[in-house]
Amino acid sequence: MDVSGILNKANDNNLNIWGDLGMDKTEGQLLQDRLIYNPKSAWEKTKLEEKEAAFAFAEEYKDFLNRVKTEREFVAEAEIQAKAAGFLPLEEVVQSGRQLQPGMKVYSVNRQKAIILAVIGKKNPAEGVNVIGAHIDAPRIDLKQNPVYEDNGLALLKTHYYGGIKKYQWVTIPLALHGVVIKENGETVNLALGDETDDFTFTITDLLPHLAHDQMEKKMSEGITGEGLNLLIGSIPYQDEKAENKVKLNILRLLNEKYGLVEEDFVSAELEIVPAFKAKDIGLDRGLVGAYGQDDRVCSFGAFRALLDLNEVDRTAICLLTDKEEIGSVGNTGAQSRFFENFLATICAYSSTGNYQDLVLRDCLSRSKMLSADVNSGVDPNFEGVQDKRNASYLGKGIVLQKYTGSRGKSGASDANPEYLAALRKLFNDHGIAWQTGEIGKVDQGGGGTIAQYLANLGMEVVDCGVSILAMHSPYEVTSKIDIYHNYKGNRVFYGWGK
Ligand code: MN
Ligand code: MN
View 1 (cartoon, rainbow, N blue to C red):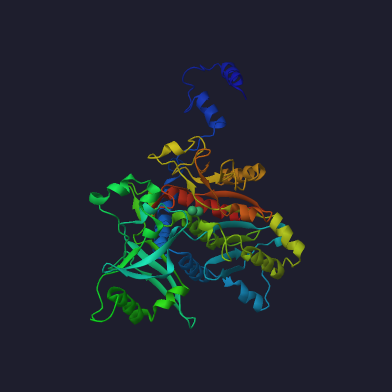
View 2: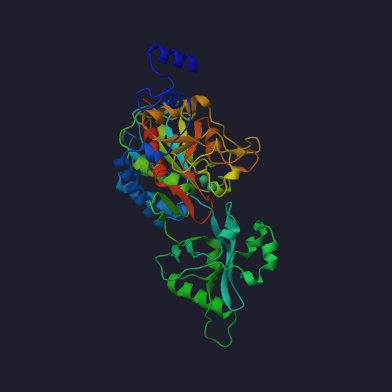
C-alpha cells in the first residue's frame, strides 16, 4: 500500500489524518512499523521474565569463561558437560556395533582441540542436517619452543603471538599461562598458572613515559614489537656461587620440583598466555559482559549450550567447534580439515535411517543448513567513524545476520544466498528472536573472515550469524547479555528447524 492509499483510507473512514487517530500510533507510525527496517533494542522487546533468564544465562556464561581460556580447556569442559547430558563418544557407539537411533546424542573429539556434538534426528541424514559451527581458539600470545631465558637478573619467556592482536594492549596487565607440556615419555602436564584466583601472576612490562620519547614517536603498530612481548616469570637467583643464569635456573628448579619438567620439555609444549582477569558485568545496570576470549566463546558456548538443551529433532542437529580460526582455520584441528566430513560420513554410515555411500554424504552436505556462529564488530561510540552505521550491528539489538564478510570488494567472503537469509528471517521472526543485520566496517576500511567459506565449499547453505562485540581481539572484549541470550535462543530454534 502506498501513502496515497493510506490517505484515502483515512478519509473514507472520516478520520482526521493529520491529527490524533484515536489510536496508540498514528497512521504514519504504523506505516513506519510496517515498511521500515529498524531493529530496536532487544531489551525493550523482551519481557521481564525473559530478561531475568538472560541475566541467569550470563551468570553461567561468565562462570564458563572463568574456567575455559583455551581451546583444550573448552573441549575438556564440553566433554564433561556432554557426558553428563547423556552424550556418548561416537567412536564407542560405532565400535560396539550399535546403530544411531533418533534421539541419540553423540560426540567426537579431535586431538583435544576440536569437538563435534550431534543429536540424531528422525530423518535420513541424506536429507541434510542443521549445523552451528563456531571456533574455540582465541587471539593470545603463545610461548616459543625454547622460551626460558635470563636477562639483567630477571627470568623471562620468549613468545610468538597468535592471531590478530594489537600488541600494545597486552603489556602491563596480569597474564596467566595455560596449556600442556608433553614429556618425552608421552605424559601430559596440564598447566593453568597465574589466574586471578592464584596469589601470583605474570606480566609483560612497558616503558615508563619519562623515557618513552622515542617510543611515543613510533606508529602504534611498532611501539611494542612482537619480539618485545617477553613474559616476566622470575627474579630470585639460585643460591650457588659457581652456577650461571641463576634466576633462570631457579625457575627451572621450581618447574622440575612441582611438575617434573626439564627445559627440553618446552619443545613439545603448547603454552598460551592469556589475560588473568575474570569475566565481569560491565555497567551500573550490569547489562554487558566484559571478558577475554568472547570471540568466539560467546557463540561457541551458545551453540554448545543450545545443543545440550535439545531433545527430539527431525533433522540431525550438529554443533561443530573448531580450532585455529584465528590463523586461517588451518591444520588438522581447523575448519578446513576433514574432521567434519569424516564425522558426517560416520553419522550417515551408522544411522538407523541412513547408510554410507559417497553419494549419500554428498547429498547430506548439499542439503544441509549452517550458521557460522561468530562475532560481529558492533558500533563503538569511541570509534563510530569506521562503520557504515546503516549497515553495522549494535550491542543490544539481537543476533547479527551477516550476509558476507571479507575485505576489499568482498574478497574472501562466503556470500550467503538471499533465499536462505529470507528463510532465516522468517524463522527468527516467527520465534521472537531479536536480530539485526551487520557488516564489518566501512567498505575498504578493513575486514575479516570466519569459518563460513570452508563449510560453504562443501555445498551447505551457510550464513554468518552471531553476537555483536566491542574491543574484539583485545584482552577484554565487551558483549550484551540480551544478545548473548537471543543468540542462544536463536541457536536452539535453528537446531530444531525443518520437518
Ligand atoms: Mn571469531
Ligand atoms: Mn577473531
